[in-house]
Image (tube, rainbow, N blue to C red; front, side, top):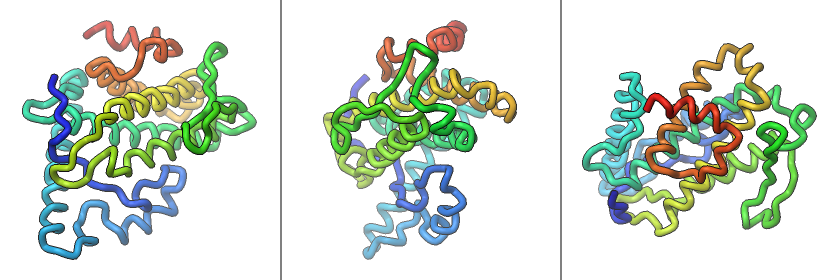
Length: 249
């Protein structure tokens, strides 16, 4: 597969209000309604407005493709790179989608995953995760699971909104480090799935959310399998579940 770094971006730019984490959705809903995500209302020229409209149309086209293939029930087909679409564009729009899915899933556990119930970020007794972002926190620190997830989601969101990494302008190139950033995002999102399955699955069942969780993780797993974004050793906490998902394919 050819990774071109000079294709047009399909990701409409987010604004701060619309991209708040789901636990703050009650506060952000009114703010986001007054600042539409996809309209060119912040442009001062007709050219900028046309560019914003074109970006939206391109993003909508890829979203329709994802929704249509997901709706068919064929998740393997849903993750494949569509003909004529740049690989980096496909990785970008799906990274944004998977971030949103994990955000919503973890949001259902917000009141149950607490510093008291989950004093460390773990995935069973053999896997513990410590946080470092290499900038503000350079050395890994032990934090509670909810604090780890807060750090993680803020870190991912900041990268998704960084135009130097996820370009927003027509013709803007993806950086040479783009795939490495996507791989790190996927690795860290996986850790949230691993924590949910090991520490909160029974609560998910009681909330009747297990089907949604399993479908989202299956989609995530097949996408990772298609594009090899997460190293095998990182997948160890959910190895049996992953093998059962991939076995039919």
